[in-house]
Image 1 (tube, rainbow, N blue to C red):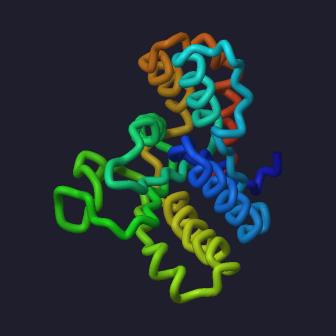
Image 2: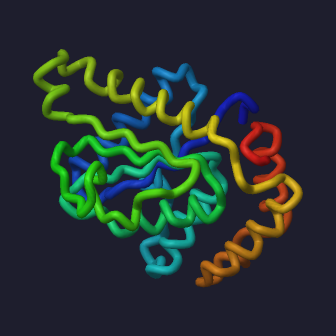
Length: 210
C-alpha cells in the first residue's frame, strides 16, 4: 500500500440493494475523485463463511475497521443503524479520524443541530457532513451526484485527519491491545502483537498519532 494513501472503513447499513449499491457507488467515487489518495474498505466485500457465527461476523468487521486509518460512518435513517454506531464507538476508542455522513434530510434528533440521538454528539476528532440528497438531485445532473458527494466527503476527511490526535505513538500499541481486549469475543486472539505493531507504525508514518 502506498504511504500516501489513507485507508477508510465505510460503516453503514448493507441489508438491501439500495444500501449495498449505494455504498459501492460512493466508495468508488471517493477513490476516483481523490485520485487514489483515499482507499475505501467496504465490509460488504468481506468473504464470510456460510457457517460463520454472529461473533465471527462481528470480529471480521472489527478486524477490518481496526486495520484502517479512518472511518466514514453513514448516519442516514430515521434511527441509526446499530452496527454502524458500534463501529463508530470502536473507532473513537482507538482515536481514528471520523466523518459522520448524513444524506438524509430528515431531522430525527433530540437536540438542536443534531439529527440523531444526542449521545452520538461531541466525540473528538470527528467531522459531521449533513447534505440534502433530494435537493442535490433536483439541483445537479444525476451523473454528477456521486462525484459531488464524494468531493464533500473528501473535504470532511481532510479536516478530520488534520485534527490533532490524542493518542501518542509511544502509548498506541499498549492502548490498542488493552482496548481490543475489552471488546471480547476472541478478537484479541485474531489481532496479534505483530499486527498491532504494524498498524501503529503505519499510523505513525502517516502522522495520525501524536
